[in-house]
Length: 221
Ligand code: ZN
Image (tube, rainbow, N blue to C red; front, side, top):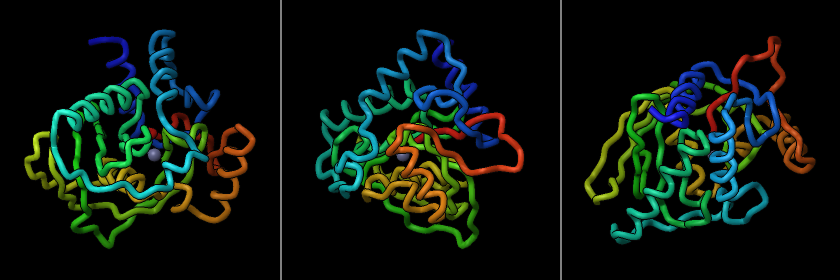
C-alpha cells in the first residue's frame, strides 16, 4: 500500500467524527508526509474555488458515454484521491457535465456516477459538518436527508441504482448540489454562511463554534 493510500484510509477513518481544520486551509488538519502534501497541493490547484462562476453553473446532462468521459472519470478519481477528498463533481474542474465521483469509505471503490438523479430521499434528516475542496478552510453544518436512492449510469453506460445512507448519502447529495450549481454554504445557517463568506474573502478559516474542540476535520468533497 502506498503512503498516499494509507493517508487516504486514515483520512477516511477520521470522517466518522467530523473535524475542524487545524492548520493552513490547504492541509485541512491532515498529517501528511511531504510527498502526499505535494500531491494534494497539485490536485487542489486543479480544483475551481469559490468565486469561480462555474461553481454556480448548473451542469448539462451527459449525452454520450465515450472515451472522453472515461478519461474525465479517471482524472477526477485521481484528483479526488490525491486531494484526499471523498467526492468530486465535474464542475469543480470546470467541466460543466453531470458527472461525479465519490469514495465514501476506506474499502469502497471509487464510484463514478453519470447523470445522477435523486429518486427518493428520506424524511429523516441529519446535520453534520461538511468540507468542500472548492471552499478551502471552510467547514459548515449542513442538514440533509439521511438516506437517498440515486439512479444514474456508470462509466460504461450501465444503469446504476445506489441506496446510500450516512456519509455516503451526504457525499452524493453534496456532489449533486455541485452539478446544480449549489454550494454547501447555501445549505447552512445564515450565521455560518456569513462566517464562511468572511473567511473566504479574507483567506482565513471558518468552522462552527463547538463546546469542545473536535479532534479531526471532516472529509472534503
Ligand atoms: Zn464540494
